[in-house]
Length: 404
Image (cartoon, rainbow, N blue to C red; front, side, top):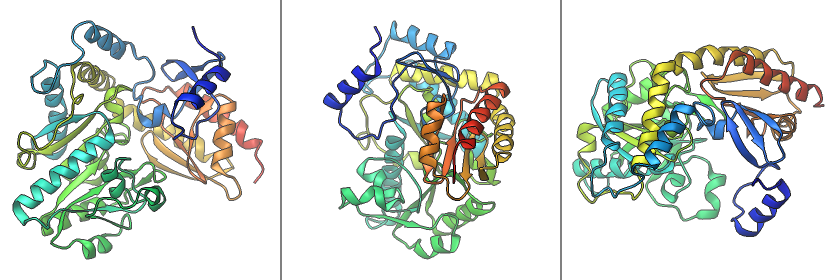
């Protein structure tokens, strides 16, 4: 029996650590692009759990796979094989081998932060095996976001998120995003890897400019450092390609991390590395209890089946263009940026994104203020043209009622 919002709010405040600035709504059901709250109100979800529910809520193929696997085998220890994890690893490896031209291997985790944690540990293991004990530094970019563990927080280029948790682990440095000269100046013999997002998602949906990742790849080759691409928010069709780095020409990362879209809401992350890099890990170097368990792996296999059948990358390109054009037509929007269906709308001076996002929620549209002045849009990859138009109509109504 569904409880009303006031009852759920009371339970939350009494029993849940208050680490989130929650919006005043409790969602209880979803179907495709729609969400229902505890009071029966219907919403268009153009955020999808921060680009996570990639195929939409309660996708029947994924739901059926989860239900069948739950009745078959949910979990066994990674001390043993299960019949889903290797199949999923093969699928991911084939996708990334096609994109990079290099076969690799996969480690499974439960989230994007854990996938990045694996990547960082692997880079240190690989770097120290060839460059000595001092080769453990990782370079990343200001405005980046790589997770909330202490290590991934140290890699995240947002000092305001780090202040409360000092001292953070050592060996992490940031430079300006898209500044190759600054990266080159910082890349001394201690650097084992560079960790970058092809689109800075939490940093405001900032795509890498043309030529940047290619130049970083060349620099990493010159300095014998690994290029690690964080595709946690951008991977698996979201940007209009299978992987965000594919928009940047002949960029072949050594390590790629995935999560969000892979499980359509089921907790799963993956760290892929080319085989010689993956081989730096030996038994006992890294592990996780739940990573690659049968239930999550079966869900991810179903997700990839649907993604391939529906050609979600092409759909993201088509519907993303429609969404960007619709947003750009609004007089209160001064700039639109992004790739595929990962988009930010920069509001005109004097409009604050937080109140606009809150008003959108009141009007039945779920978006978020990714920066103080911009809104993020990440609808399901199967969103229809009619739903795009409906979302833009709601936003127009909201913006027309705002006063800069």
